Image: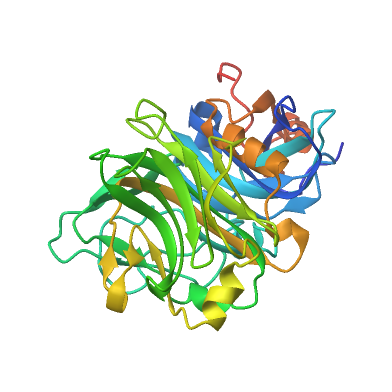
Length: 385
Protein backbone atom coordinates (compact mmCIF):
# COMPACT_ATOMS: atom_id res chain seq x y z
CA UNK A 1 0.00 0.00 0.00
CA UNK A 2 1.63 3.24 -1.17
CA UNK A 3 1.62 6.60 0.57
CA UNK A 4 1.16 10.10 -0.76
CA UNK A 5 4.64 11.59 -0.88
CA UNK A 6 5.46 13.93 1.99
CA UNK A 7 2.41 13.17 4.14
CA UNK A 8 3.04 12.00 7.71
CA UNK A 9 -0.39 10.71 8.78
CA UNK A 10 -3.37 8.96 7.33
CA UNK A 11 -6.49 7.12 8.46
CA UNK A 12 -8.66 4.73 6.48
CA UNK A 13 -12.42 5.17 6.43
CA UNK A 14 -14.93 2.77 4.92
CA UNK A 15 -18.57 3.17 3.95
CA UNK A 16 -21.19 1.18 5.78
CA UNK A 17 -23.41 -0.18 3.01
CA UNK A 18 -26.58 -1.30 4.81
CA UNK A 19 -28.32 1.86 3.54
CA UNK A 20 -26.89 1.68 0.01
CA UNK A 21 -29.55 -0.25 -1.88
CA UNK A 22 -27.84 0.00 -5.25
CA UNK A 23 -24.31 0.93 -6.35
CA UNK A 24 -23.81 4.70 -6.52
CA UNK A 25 -21.52 6.60 -8.90
CA UNK A 26 -19.95 10.02 -8.43
CA UNK A 27 -21.49 10.43 -5.00
CA UNK A 28 -20.53 13.45 -2.81
CA UNK A 29 -19.75 11.56 0.40
CA UNK A 30 -19.86 13.55 3.64
CA UNK A 31 -16.80 12.86 5.83
CA UNK A 32 -16.40 14.35 9.31
CA UNK A 33 -14.33 14.13 12.49
CA UNK A 34 -14.82 16.11 15.70
CA UNK A 35 -12.11 17.23 18.12
CA UNK A 36 -9.70 14.66 16.75
CA UNK A 37 -6.34 14.99 18.51
CA UNK A 38 -4.02 13.67 15.77
CA UNK A 39 -5.22 16.48 13.49
CA UNK A 40 -3.08 18.78 15.63
CA UNK A 41 -0.38 17.85 13.10
CA UNK A 42 -2.41 19.33 10.26
CA UNK A 43 -1.97 22.92 9.12
CA UNK A 44 -4.10 25.56 10.84
CA UNK A 45 -5.78 26.18 7.49
CA UNK A 46 -6.58 22.51 6.86
CA UNK A 47 -5.00 22.95 3.44
CA UNK A 48 -2.98 19.74 3.79
CA UNK A 49 -6.02 17.42 3.95
CA UNK A 50 -6.10 14.95 1.09
CA UNK A 51 -8.56 12.14 0.28
CA UNK A 52 -7.59 9.12 -1.79
CA UNK A 53 -9.18 5.98 -3.13
CA UNK A 54 -8.46 2.58 -1.60
CA UNK A 55 -4.98 2.37 -3.17
CA UNK A 56 -3.87 5.20 -0.88
CA UNK A 57 -2.55 7.27 -3.79
CA UNK A 58 -5.30 8.13 -6.29
CA UNK A 59 -6.60 11.52 -5.19
CA UNK A 60 -10.29 12.39 -4.94
CA UNK A 61 -11.58 15.94 -5.21
CA UNK A 62 -13.21 17.34 -2.10
CA UNK A 63 -15.13 20.36 -0.86
CA UNK A 64 -13.99 21.54 2.58
CA UNK A 65 -17.18 22.79 4.22
CA UNK A 66 -15.85 23.51 7.72
CA UNK A 67 -12.46 23.33 9.44
CA UNK A 68 -11.20 24.42 12.84
CA UNK A 69 -8.03 23.52 14.72
CA UNK A 70 -4.72 22.08 13.61
CA UNK A 71 -1.22 23.47 14.20
CA UNK A 72 -1.06 22.08 17.73
CA UNK A 73 -4.79 21.84 18.48
CA UNK A 74 -7.27 19.01 17.97
CA UNK A 75 -9.36 19.68 14.88
CA UNK A 76 -12.89 19.23 13.58
CA UNK A 77 -14.00 19.31 9.97
CA UNK A 78 -16.76 18.54 7.48
CA UNK A 79 -16.00 17.80 3.83
CA UNK A 80 -17.65 16.15 0.85
CA UNK A 81 -15.52 14.06 -1.49
CA UNK A 82 -16.53 12.89 -4.94
CA UNK A 83 -16.49 9.08 -4.82
CA UNK A 84 -16.33 7.41 -8.25
CA UNK A 85 -18.32 4.47 -6.91
CA UNK A 86 -19.86 3.20 -3.69
CA UNK A 87 -20.67 -0.48 -3.45
CA UNK A 88 -24.00 -1.80 -2.17
CA UNK A 89 -22.52 -5.19 -1.20
CA UNK A 90 -19.15 -4.33 0.40
CA UNK A 91 -17.39 -1.50 2.17
CA UNK A 92 -15.73 1.11 -0.05
CA UNK A 93 -12.36 2.08 1.45
CA UNK A 94 -10.78 5.52 1.24
CA UNK A 95 -7.99 7.35 3.05
CA UNK A 96 -7.71 10.73 4.73
CA UNK A 97 -4.17 12.20 4.76
CA UNK A 98 -2.66 15.17 6.59
CA UNK A 99 0.62 16.41 8.00
CA UNK A 100 2.62 18.05 5.21
CA UNK A 101 4.30 21.37 5.89
CA UNK A 102 3.74 23.98 3.21
CA UNK A 103 1.04 21.98 1.41
CA UNK A 104 -1.12 23.94 -1.03
CA UNK A 105 -4.88 23.97 -0.55
CA UNK A 106 -6.18 20.51 -1.43
CA UNK A 107 -9.84 21.49 -1.61
CA UNK A 108 -11.46 21.82 -5.04
CA UNK A 109 -15.15 22.36 -4.41
CA UNK A 110 -16.05 22.98 -8.05
CA UNK A 111 -14.96 19.43 -8.93
CA UNK A 112 -16.26 17.73 -5.78
CA UNK A 113 -19.74 17.25 -7.29
CA UNK A 114 -20.88 15.57 -10.48
CA UNK A 115 -21.71 17.28 -13.76
CA UNK A 116 -25.44 17.43 -12.94
CA UNK A 117 -25.04 19.42 -9.72
CA UNK A 118 -26.04 23.01 -10.53
CA UNK A 119 -25.87 24.58 -7.08
CA UNK A 120 -24.76 23.71 -3.54
CA UNK A 121 -25.28 26.37 -0.86
CA UNK A 122 -23.70 25.41 2.47
CA UNK A 123 -24.77 28.78 3.97
CA UNK A 124 -21.71 28.85 6.25
CA UNK A 125 -20.79 32.46 5.50
CA UNK A 126 -22.75 34.26 8.24
CA UNK A 127 -25.38 36.99 7.88
CA UNK A 128 -25.12 39.62 5.17
CA UNK A 129 -27.25 41.13 2.41
CA UNK A 130 -24.19 41.77 0.22
CA UNK A 131 -24.65 40.59 -3.36
CA UNK A 132 -23.68 36.94 -3.96
CA UNK A 133 -22.57 36.60 -0.33
CA UNK A 134 -23.67 32.96 -0.09
CA UNK A 135 -21.35 30.95 -2.30
CA UNK A 136 -22.26 28.10 -4.60
CA UNK A 137 -19.71 25.35 -3.99
CA UNK A 138 -19.98 24.18 -7.61
CA UNK A 139 -19.01 27.49 -9.19
CA UNK A 140 -20.93 30.67 -9.87
CA UNK A 141 -24.61 30.24 -8.97
CA UNK A 142 -24.34 32.22 -5.75
CA UNK A 143 -27.21 33.60 -3.65
CA UNK A 144 -28.11 36.96 -2.10
CA UNK A 145 -30.06 37.39 1.14
CA UNK A 146 -33.06 39.76 1.07
CA UNK A 147 -33.73 40.84 4.67
CA UNK A 148 -34.94 44.42 4.85
CA UNK A 149 -35.53 44.43 8.62
CA UNK A 150 -32.33 42.57 9.50
CA UNK A 151 -33.91 39.82 11.59
CA UNK A 152 -32.63 36.71 9.80
CA UNK A 153 -29.41 35.26 11.12
CA UNK A 154 -27.06 32.32 10.95
CA UNK A 155 -28.47 29.27 12.75
CA UNK A 156 -27.47 25.71 13.53
CA UNK A 157 -27.66 23.66 10.35
CA UNK A 158 -27.31 19.99 9.56
CA UNK A 159 -23.74 20.35 8.32
CA UNK A 160 -22.23 23.24 10.24
CA UNK A 161 -24.38 26.37 10.02
CA UNK A 162 -27.46 27.25 7.98
CA UNK A 163 -29.62 30.34 7.56
CA UNK A 164 -32.46 30.96 10.02
CA UNK A 165 -35.02 32.91 8.00
CA UNK A 166 -37.61 34.81 10.01
CA UNK A 167 -40.66 34.32 7.79
CA UNK A 168 -41.33 38.03 7.24
CA UNK A 169 -40.19 38.71 3.67
CA UNK A 170 -36.71 37.19 4.15
CA UNK A 171 -35.39 34.91 1.43
CA UNK A 172 -32.41 34.08 -0.78
CA UNK A 173 -32.33 35.05 -4.46
CA UNK A 174 -30.24 33.03 -6.90
CA UNK A 175 -31.10 34.25 -10.37
CA UNK A 176 -27.87 33.02 -12.00
CA UNK A 177 -29.31 29.54 -11.50
CA UNK A 178 -31.81 30.25 -14.30
CA UNK A 179 -29.09 30.08 -16.95
CA UNK A 180 -27.69 26.86 -15.48
CA UNK A 181 -31.11 25.15 -15.57
CA UNK A 182 -32.32 26.50 -18.92
CA UNK A 183 -32.03 23.20 -20.81
CA UNK A 184 -32.72 20.83 -17.92
CA UNK A 185 -35.68 18.48 -18.43
CA UNK A 186 -34.90 16.36 -15.35
CA UNK A 187 -33.57 17.24 -11.94
CA UNK A 188 -33.71 17.32 -8.16
CA UNK A 189 -34.15 19.94 -5.44
CA UNK A 190 -32.87 19.10 -1.94
CA UNK A 191 -32.62 20.96 1.38
CA UNK A 192 -32.44 20.36 5.11
CA UNK A 193 -35.28 22.26 6.77
CA UNK A 194 -36.36 23.03 10.32
CA UNK A 195 -39.67 24.88 10.50
CA UNK A 196 -40.46 27.43 13.24
CA UNK A 197 -43.99 27.62 12.14
CA UNK A 198 -47.66 28.30 12.40
CA UNK A 199 -48.99 24.95 11.08
CA UNK A 200 -51.83 26.73 9.29
CA UNK A 201 -49.53 28.69 6.96
CA UNK A 202 -47.45 27.88 3.87
CA UNK A 203 -43.66 27.91 3.80
CA UNK A 204 -41.69 27.79 0.55
CA UNK A 205 -38.43 25.86 0.41
CA UNK A 206 -37.56 26.55 -3.24
CA UNK A 207 -39.24 28.12 -6.24
CA UNK A 208 -38.49 29.13 -9.80
CA UNK A 209 -40.71 31.54 -11.70
CA UNK A 210 -41.73 35.10 -12.44
CA UNK A 211 -45.29 35.08 -11.02
CA UNK A 212 -47.97 32.60 -9.96
CA UNK A 213 -48.94 31.85 -13.56
CA UNK A 214 -45.44 30.58 -14.40
CA UNK A 215 -44.10 28.78 -11.37
CA UNK A 216 -42.34 25.68 -10.03
CA UNK A 217 -42.09 25.24 -6.26
CA UNK A 218 -41.41 22.97 -3.29
CA UNK A 219 -43.03 23.96 0.01
CA UNK A 220 -44.81 22.98 3.19
CA UNK A 221 -48.53 23.78 3.05
CA UNK A 222 -50.62 23.78 6.21
CA UNK A 223 -53.62 25.98 5.47
CA UNK A 224 -55.75 23.18 3.98
CA UNK A 225 -53.83 20.09 5.05
CA UNK A 226 -50.39 19.34 6.46
CA UNK A 227 -48.32 18.32 3.46
CA UNK A 228 -45.13 18.75 1.52
CA UNK A 229 -46.21 20.03 -1.87
CA UNK A 230 -44.37 20.22 -5.18
CA UNK A 231 -46.15 22.31 -7.77
CA UNK A 232 -45.99 23.50 -11.34
CA UNK A 233 -48.23 25.49 -13.62
CA UNK A 234 -49.41 22.19 -15.13
CA UNK A 235 -49.33 19.85 -12.11
CA UNK A 236 -49.46 19.77 -8.33
CA UNK A 237 -48.29 16.86 -6.18
CA UNK A 238 -48.49 16.60 -2.42
CA UNK A 239 -47.58 14.15 0.34
CA UNK A 240 -49.38 14.46 3.69
CA UNK A 241 -47.28 14.91 6.84
CA UNK A 242 -48.19 15.06 10.51
CA UNK A 243 -47.40 18.09 12.65
CA UNK A 244 -45.44 15.81 14.97
CA UNK A 245 -43.12 14.67 12.17
CA UNK A 246 -39.45 15.56 11.88
CA UNK A 247 -40.12 18.86 10.09
CA UNK A 248 -40.91 20.42 13.45
CA UNK A 249 -38.19 20.90 16.03
CA UNK A 250 -35.38 19.24 14.06
CA UNK A 251 -33.86 19.37 10.62
CA UNK A 252 -35.62 17.19 8.03
CA UNK A 253 -34.31 16.31 4.58
CA UNK A 254 -36.88 17.39 1.97
CA UNK A 255 -36.43 16.54 -1.69
CA UNK A 256 -38.34 16.51 -4.97
CA UNK A 257 -36.94 14.57 -7.92
CA UNK A 258 -38.30 14.71 -11.48
CA UNK A 259 -37.34 11.99 -13.96
CA UNK A 260 -38.74 13.67 -17.06
CA UNK A 261 -42.06 11.85 -16.73
CA UNK A 262 -43.22 12.88 -13.25
CA UNK A 263 -42.03 14.02 -9.84
CA UNK A 264 -41.55 12.19 -6.53
CA UNK A 265 -41.36 13.79 -3.08
CA UNK A 266 -39.00 12.38 -0.46
CA UNK A 267 -38.90 13.08 3.27
CA UNK A 268 -35.84 11.90 5.21
CA UNK A 269 -34.79 9.68 2.34
CA UNK A 270 -38.13 7.92 1.92
CA UNK A 271 -40.32 8.28 -1.18
CA UNK A 272 -43.78 9.52 -0.22
CA UNK A 273 -47.18 8.37 -1.42
CA UNK A 274 -48.41 10.55 -4.26
CA UNK A 275 -51.59 12.55 -4.36
CA UNK A 276 -52.05 14.53 -7.58
CA UNK A 277 -54.21 17.61 -7.10
CA UNK A 278 -53.59 18.70 -10.67
CA UNK A 279 -51.85 16.63 -13.36
CA UNK A 280 -52.40 18.12 -16.80
CA UNK A 281 -48.76 17.66 -17.89
CA UNK A 282 -46.63 15.80 -15.36
CA UNK A 283 -43.58 15.89 -17.66
CA UNK A 284 -42.97 19.65 -17.30
CA UNK A 285 -39.86 20.74 -15.32
CA UNK A 286 -37.14 23.44 -15.15
CA UNK A 287 -36.75 23.94 -18.91
CA UNK A 288 -40.48 24.41 -19.48
CA UNK A 289 -40.79 27.18 -16.92
CA UNK A 290 -37.68 28.98 -18.11
CA UNK A 291 -38.81 28.71 -21.74
CA UNK A 292 -42.08 30.34 -20.63
CA UNK A 293 -40.21 33.33 -19.17
CA UNK A 294 -39.29 32.38 -15.60
CA UNK A 295 -36.33 34.57 -14.65
CA UNK A 296 -35.91 34.18 -10.86
CA UNK A 297 -34.87 31.39 -8.50
CA UNK A 298 -35.75 31.68 -4.81
CA UNK A 299 -34.88 29.84 -1.61
CA UNK A 300 -37.43 30.60 1.09
CA UNK A 301 -40.11 32.37 -0.98
CA UNK A 302 -42.20 32.10 -4.13
CA UNK A 303 -43.52 34.77 -6.53
CA UNK A 304 -47.20 35.65 -6.73
CA UNK A 305 -49.20 38.07 -8.89
CA UNK A 306 -46.84 40.59 -10.43
CA UNK A 307 -43.83 38.73 -9.11
CA UNK A 308 -44.09 39.87 -5.50
CA UNK A 309 -42.70 37.24 -3.08
CA UNK A 310 -45.04 35.39 -0.70
CA UNK A 311 -45.16 32.16 1.33
CA UNK A 312 -41.92 32.93 3.19
CA UNK A 313 -39.97 30.18 4.92
CA UNK A 314 -39.77 30.49 8.71
CA UNK A 315 -36.89 28.46 10.14
CA UNK A 316 -33.50 27.04 9.19
CA UNK A 317 -32.44 26.07 5.67
CA UNK A 318 -29.17 24.23 5.07
CA UNK A 319 -27.34 22.32 2.32
CA UNK A 320 -29.59 23.74 -0.41
CA UNK A 321 -28.83 21.76 -3.57
CA UNK A 322 -30.18 21.74 -7.12
CA UNK A 323 -29.30 19.19 -9.81
CA UNK A 324 -30.43 19.16 -13.40
CA UNK A 325 -29.80 17.88 -16.90
CA UNK A 326 -31.21 15.79 -19.72
CA UNK A 327 -29.68 12.47 -18.61
CA UNK A 328 -31.40 10.11 -16.19
CA UNK A 329 -28.75 10.71 -13.49
CA UNK A 330 -29.88 14.33 -13.14
CA UNK A 331 -32.92 12.96 -11.35
CA UNK A 332 -31.37 11.51 -8.21
CA UNK A 333 -32.42 7.92 -7.73
CA UNK A 334 -34.22 6.59 -4.68
CA UNK A 335 -30.97 4.81 -3.72
CA UNK A 336 -28.99 8.06 -3.96
CA UNK A 337 -31.51 10.04 -1.92
CA UNK A 338 -31.74 7.36 0.77
CA UNK A 339 -27.98 7.22 1.28
CA UNK A 340 -27.66 10.99 1.08
CA UNK A 341 -30.03 11.19 4.02
CA UNK A 342 -28.23 8.55 6.12
CA UNK A 343 -24.73 9.77 5.24
CA UNK A 344 -25.67 13.28 6.36
CA UNK A 345 -27.91 12.51 9.32
CA UNK A 346 -26.19 9.65 11.13
CA UNK A 347 -23.72 10.50 13.90
CA UNK A 348 -21.02 8.38 12.25
CA UNK A 349 -21.98 9.49 8.71
CA UNK A 350 -22.29 5.78 7.84
CA UNK A 351 -18.49 5.51 7.99
CA UNK A 352 -16.20 3.15 9.90
CA UNK A 353 -12.75 4.52 10.73
CA UNK A 354 -9.56 2.49 10.87
CA UNK A 355 -6.53 3.10 13.07
CA UNK A 356 -4.24 6.08 12.74
CA UNK A 357 -1.17 5.32 10.60
CA UNK A 358 2.23 7.05 10.50
CA UNK A 359 4.25 7.17 7.30
CA UNK A 360 6.89 4.41 7.63
CA UNK A 361 9.35 6.46 5.59
CA UNK A 362 9.22 9.16 8.27
CA UNK A 363 9.62 6.57 11.02
CA UNK A 364 12.71 5.19 9.28
CA UNK A 365 14.15 8.67 8.95
CA UNK A 366 13.60 9.30 12.63
CA UNK A 367 15.66 6.23 13.49
CA UNK A 368 18.73 7.47 11.56
CA UNK A 369 21.50 9.65 13.06
CA UNK A 370 20.29 13.20 13.48
CA UNK A 371 23.04 14.69 11.29
CA UNK A 372 22.95 15.46 8.51
CA UNK A 373 19.47 13.95 8.03
CA UNK A 374 16.46 16.22 8.65
CA UNK A 375 14.15 14.46 11.09
CA UNK A 376 10.36 14.64 10.72
CA UNK A 377 8.33 14.70 13.90
CA UNK A 378 7.34 11.12 14.77
CA UNK A 379 3.96 9.97 16.03
CA UNK A 380 3.71 10.43 19.82
CA UNK A 381 3.27 7.08 21.56
CA UNK A 382 0.39 8.22 23.75
CA UNK A 383 -1.74 9.96 21.12
CA UNK A 384 -5.40 8.84 21.24
CA UNK A 385 -7.09 7.15 18.31
